Image (cartoon, rainbow, N blue to C red; front, side, top):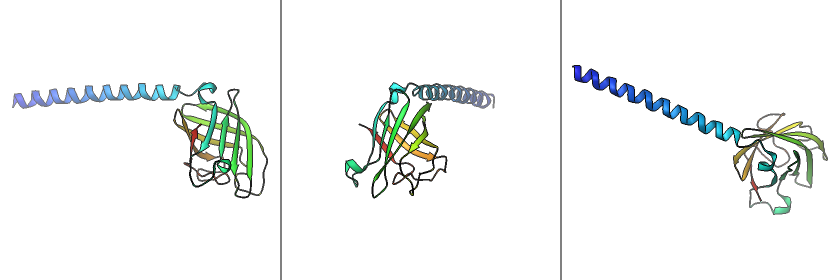
Length: 149
């Protein structure tokens, strides 16, 4: 009986220590990924919507400039529309603050903010706007992947 109690106690100690080590490792990993995207130079570049169904000139494109400004070209079916403004990064979230939109009468004409998630150092994923999580902008839908070119 004493041997069983000792074995259970040892097992409990090992489980607690393993859990603490894993939790500590997770926090270090979260901190590293959250600190990974704060410099505009890390994000700056051109991101093109990843699809083969649409010819390249008609694919939505996001340009993030090193000075903190952006240009977002969206497909409106009959034409391309442009949105520009400034952006900020917080961890793996990129928030675009809209200053001008050169189209009307199409989805996304009244947005003030647009959110992308960094899915890797080469890709961004369109997430949402201030109009709602499932709100498209033109032909750009939530979870559309934009690859850095």
